[in-house]
Image 1 (spheres, rainbow, N blue to C red):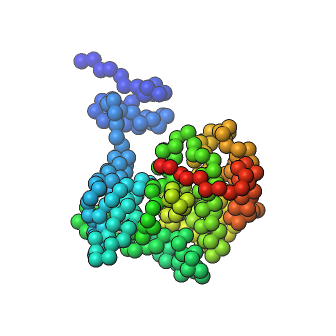
Image 2: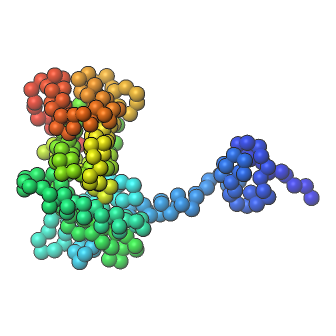
Image 3: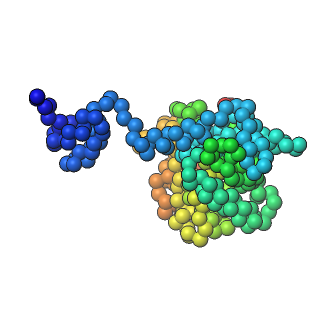
Length: 309
């Protein structure tokens, strides 16, 4: 009987005979080798399964958390292992809610911490008007008959459409630069508030910004990574990340901003996105002042420009 030698296609090193029927790791170059045309690793499959379970919620489905039912109205996107939905409570006095849903085993502790962070932030806000800048926690905990799913329920102000990642998908070539101005200003407004209380968000990204097209609003969610007392560096990282979100929305994923973006705005966004020390030296209020100056130079006096989705 003749045996065909098995060799690693990457480095040509000999492989053990078990490579005929199962995946092996090359002992020389570390490559994962399989004779099949497709392979799903166990950890990758589990992550995909977790996302699929959380995503398996169709419009009209009702889930129950902390004794209250929530009827799913629409999809608000996803962030990591968590799927976001727009829902309406089914009680006597219905209200809109953002339901964060996940089957990830760590979701219970993550949602619990995010709820606690938001409650601490709300307790530290002096002005009632400023509370509108922060999500309002309604409930968190396991979903009844939810196959191991956990939920974080936030009160959802009417009119918020989806997250900034979805907005980027809607305008893959970049949004109107005038919209980038108010989107960034809304994020800076929230960050100025929480930084002033000694907190940093810690995870600014497109998925964590819900956008209100009609009223030009942005609501930051995803507070599970927020930290307190980490100093100016952590706050500056928030600011730089917010600038990088704006760069993405403007279509500036490459080394240079698109030519359609006016130079004053392009320069400011690039400086803030690439230089954390620049953000640290100006802070949220300083960046907002620079942004207002850049917008006036680029577009003239402020004017309301509708965002049509």
